[in-house]
Amino acid sequence: MDNQDIRWKQRFANYRLALANLTEGIEISKPSDLEKSGIIQIFEYTFELAWKTMKDYLKEMEVEVNYPREVIKTAFSYELIEDGDTWIDMLEKRNLMSHTYDKKNAELAYSLIKNEYFEKLKTLEAYLSKKL
Image (tube, rainbow, N blue to C red; front, top):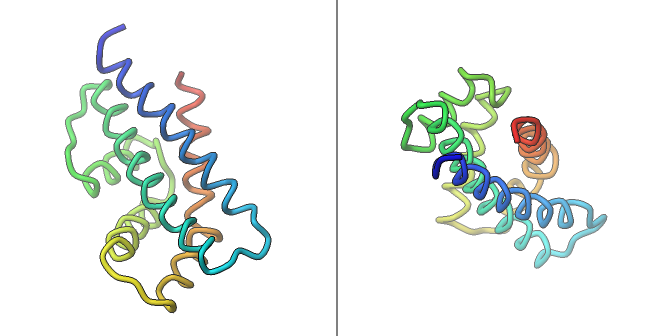
């Protein structure tokens, strides 16, 4: 096993932990504003680990990609993920969330995370689990 093979598996282990934290947040039936803020923050680092895990996995396949958008497009073309448009939207919203805050945007972000993005993150986890 080479270092790259180990790297994607280690990053994937961290991704799974982050996704477990996000799952715990998503399962809160009526989260407070503070809990929603926490869920948004957890999403941000879970998404970061998602694209970096895909990058490391692709690198093991000898596919060189470096930037999040490039990783997402390549992961879609290699069928690691479905619905590349939603993943690009996640990237754009994650960037917006990390640089601005207002209650309206936070509510929108929480809704997108709960109703759209979370399932995509779980699907990636299931796909990569099969590759272990």
